[in-house]
Length: 281
Image (cartoon, rainbow, N blue to C red; front, side, top):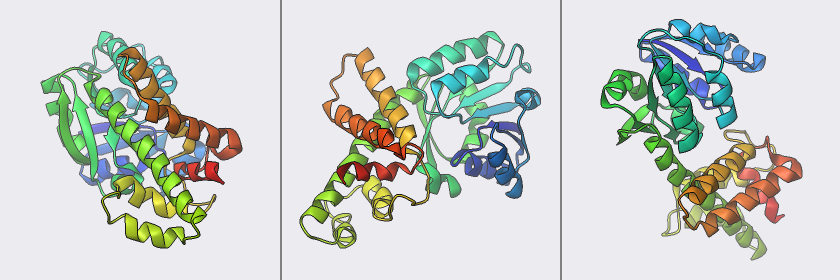
């Protein structure tokens, strides 16, 4: 298929490369000059102009925030007939539904398909994708989605995928903060956190988040950035917003959100999200 991929950041670029490697024609759209240069160096053509996406059969969106998604959709006054938009960003149910209505008014078919798995699984094409929307639209874009990972049918309504991602991000935020607190406890007990991590991650208290973020937590402030603290400030805010909308109680999420905000306030917002552990220092 002819695909435009909007948002070639840390996770977007490897996702785009998997689509290209699967044999689809692909062009990237990315505002950051540095990210465009990185994409080109890795064999992905990239433009700074939104209208590059106009001719694509499928437009994949991987921007960071609801505001960025709204601004992106606002750039288009007309679309290619029958164009399919796949919104893979984590923006929350309300945002994706609002922007889907705007896109549908222009004649687009919209699939809500947020992902989980991070950069590591984006690189291997093994992301978990929560795809929701009209069955025909999901079926049309499935070959593109399958290039990036395992597609799970999340529901027939746009927004269902985002709702599932909200639950996922609740677990990610709470698990990451719990991992940071546990490793800080190990240090306070006079133990080597690295040795403790190697033992407990195989026990009943282990988790994917502990095994993935734990080693980076122990590497220090300058560890490689795969997902920023600011992203989890945003994501945990989306979880809190969704919870308020349905009167759900999420006290653990509130604690985790406060820790990410504390890390951002300490100047760690652009650092790897594992640096939330520094709020225990």
